[in-house]
Image 1 (cartoon, protein in one colour):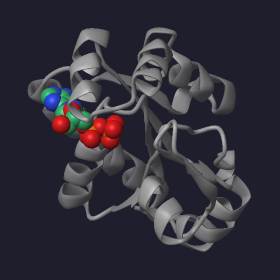
Image 2 (tube, rainbow, N blue to C red):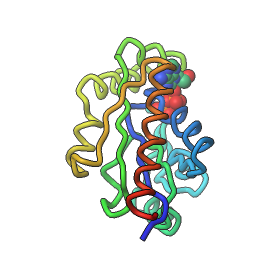
Image 3 (cartoon, rainbow, N blue to C red):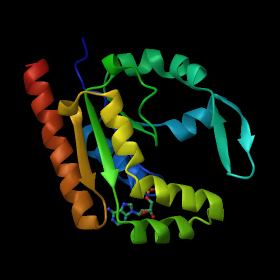
Length: 173
Ligand code: DAT
């Protein structure tokens, strides 16, 4: 039994996952688990895709590597996919969304190769990550939040903090 919840913050790259997770971790004491960093630091990959400028993730190795930590609870998992994590690990799935014009600017500022930029824009427009969440988890634990502005980010964070408080009331107290 977990005494702290596990939350996935997912969404297309550039949507604001890292920014949300860092603030949430600071405010709540839950730990920010950047899958990107873990893949790199713990070598959970089959090499680097030069064209796409991203690691080719070895999902089995990744899950083995984080299982003991995550099962204890209290993690905010930051990754642009959610279907790989066992349902039993996860208490809330936050899918962040952003307008495509804003996303274009954010990804352009990161110097993404054109093909990667276009694929991510298409993914956001086609709601790929939202659908992936819906295909992988119960509707009751999925929340879709927009991340266009700082004000929206603030209210998202407030809302997730309230949810964490409620989870603790329901499951621990
Ligand atoms: P991700 O981790 O999903 O790739 P990020 O947190 O690194 O995204 O954010 C990408 C950029 O966009 C970064 O410069 C911060 C900015 N940003 C993110 N969410 C925002 C929001 N709600 N309002 C304004 N800027 C935001």
